[in-house]
Figure 1 (cartoon, one colour):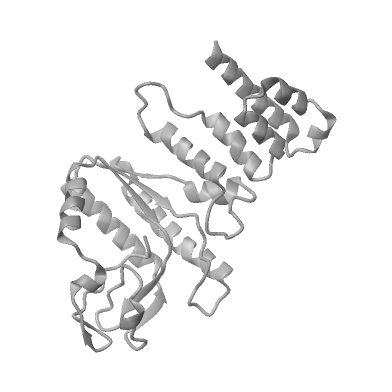
Figure 2 (tube, one colour):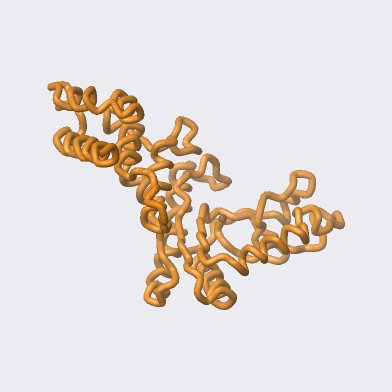
Length: 267
């Protein structure tokens, strides 16, 4: 979700009469979406970037990119949304959900994938830092104001990616390495999902594989974990070369704990 604002709803664009069909409105989709909203008990809101395109006449923000054939450089403009407007809009979403689904829980996250391009006259790296910071501060202000009401929660996917792993992204910087994504989602399941049958994926397995993917553990560890090669794994972590691994002793303890988990499952 981009930096938030009212969706631009002008009747004309670039001097051409347009209809709502240009923006893909579909009554059947709207009805189906409303049905989902009316029955869900948990809303997950993921905010992505604070850079937005807007209509200069209405000042309303576009939900998605303006089609190229309708783009008007004098009317379709770019800006960075502010902390205040994002805070107010996130809070408005919160109040709307509470009004129509008063018992629903709301989980807020910040999308960790960085910008790969910007229309600012800045480096994309610095523009991304500002974009994420604007949203993170806006989210925090809403959380501080509303958290005690007991309906809104923050899930730190952004912080897990940026602060826990040293190399979380694929080479394109637009996708996470699969084991790291798996770890985040499995951790989410363990914290937020009810498991009636005790069949949640192993969080410790996901953590070890994520650390392999991020370069904290050798690739060989990942291969042996995938195949549950306990004897080989134990022998490998006792080799002198394992001392070169980051936090080698803590890593040994973690792997031994994982092997104990396997033994418990097999017994």
